[in-house]
Image 1 (spheres, rainbow, N blue to C red):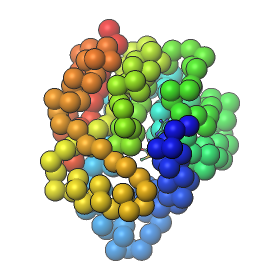
Image 2 (cartoon, helix red, strand yellow):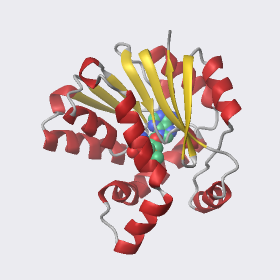
Image 3 (cartoon, rainbow, N blue to C red):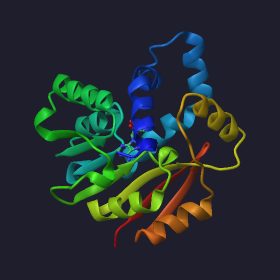
Image 4 (cartoon, protein in one colour):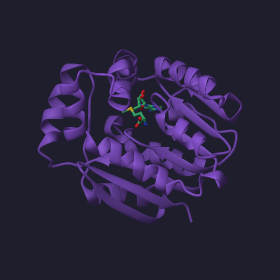
Length: 217
Ligand SMILES: C[S@@+](CC[C@H](N)C(=O)[O-])C[C@H]1O[C@@H](n2cnc3c(N)ncnc32)[C@H](O)[C@@H]1O
């Protein structure tokens, strides 16, 4: 792993509890209220992704940067036949495996600690998800090309928008914790997806994010 990726991994190993608390709301009521106000797009992109994964019972899924596995658990509960999650953080992968076991989904899920660029998929997945991933990717094109190779039907991804009031604050806050974040214009997202070989690109503004659905044919 590159120095940058090792820093990224260490950051997520440290941040797992804080990150999961954004979903579980296991926080003080003030922090939970702040999340609902200022991280609303994280909840909205979750809804967006589940909707665009339909018909989920017909789709196998690869979740790149699966984090604590919230997306895969929700997909399992909706009848997804198989999902694989990959992540560079061993803490995240350990958490996902425990969640899958607790939910009775171990036989329909697989969690692998790897960088996407080192991953050899055993098959093509119908749907490939990259949510909250491109914020942290320095060179997105090779990652998108690899996702394209892993995808049989469609990609669902999010990209943080450039030129929002929150972008410079977030950049400074995460830089202090050793994590580099990047932001995108609409044209950059479209150009990257096109260069990676995606077609029928649908790009929606969801709060401070772009949410994207794109097909491979
Ligand atoms: C913000 S979290 C998002 C987690 C999850 N997708 C969600 O939205 O709940 C980003 C995750 O991407 C992982 N990640 C970053 N770069 C990666 C890479 N090159 N390959 C695999 N995982 C990566 C990090 O370890 C982290 O867990």
